[in-house]
Length: 322
Ligand SMILES: [Fe+2]
Image 1 (tube, rainbow, N blue to C red):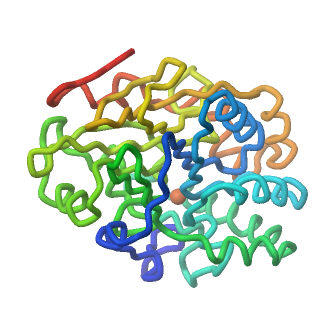
Image 2 (image 1 turned 120 degrees about the vertical axis):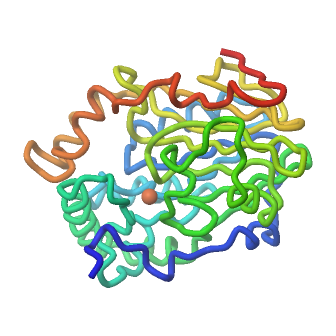
């Protein structure tokens, strides 16, 4: 029997083709903000960055905007702020709305993720579910969130998901699943073709990267923003979001490419890390499941490097600006 946290509930299943028929949200610029994980300081920094852009970007919180916010006041505040924008269901929200028997945290962790991490994630989820139960109005709002979002920028389709096009908690758009740059395997080509999009934006796996593909002679890309609520690179506290626009960002991206008329960029956002660390340790004191699993990443970043994340260098018309 599959253990909690390793299991992907049937209700998580989606289809790439569904993205093709969704009504598109048209925008000049979109920020894709995956994996906020209940980080109120990162959220404020992202909102402040958005406020500097004209016209203002559409914000899409593509799931897992809850996680560390296991406190009634903070839970309410984060959800009220996020739900003022476009938002998708992540596995965390799915397990708050309707806990699936045996799903645990709903992460569907693959075998390479350590069992202790999975156990602690299930414990974090159990505590968050207790807090969420105090807020039936927010649970009701989360329950009607879509699982996928289609965007139209400069006439090109963008598919926003939490995991991958086949599953809310899929790992198919994780960096571990990627072929060497320059290669487009048939299943990835099929996702782009069936979804009728040129960009797929994801998060869930918590490891940021971007990679180009060629599908029916056209350039396409996957952008996984890693985490908008935790550092993404070693000794770099900044969080990362994906920005897709007709125009380049008014600030230097970490890495970027052109897909047709689109500027697709990974953007690092500075945030009040030291102040929020105090809040994190108030919510999750030393020895608690979240402290054990995440404090090291929040303080020092994961063992991931920018050079590993930027997989855009190979391919036609690379347009690397930094
Ligand atoms: Fe997730």
